[in-house]
Length: 173
Image 1 (cartoon, rainbow, N blue to C red):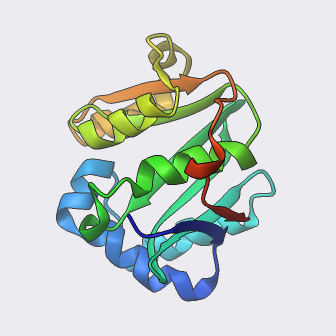
Image 2 (cartoon, rainbow, N blue to C red; image 1 turned 90 degrees about the vertical axis):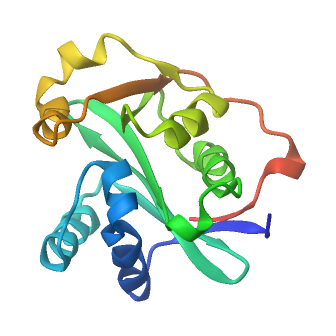
């Protein structure tokens, strides 16, 4: 795996990040397809949200994905997206572990389409556990995935995991 770093998201990243989420397979895994207009509107909303922390995942000198956290319905959520060419290289796990050093709020929640086995494994490796009560607490959020005929699985992370120094990429958020 190439050396990984997290840095602040900049406008120049948006074209690449849109291409990643517009990929049909990636869009199906994330269960939220967006056209360019909706993507840019969503990014503007995130940028205006003072609770949001956004980052770009960089490896081998190029953008490989994005990661961030935000507040929804009184809970703190985290999400990540990698370009399909970068799946299976350990970038998501390394990025989430690094992000957990920056985002210290606990509990931290993540919502994953049930067919997205890769993202589920990333979360489990990073200490998240399946939260069976989340569906009752956040029915509106789950409805988004249900409308797309996919069931969302909710995970939560309640403690700050120990990460060995050798496993930590550079943090620049």
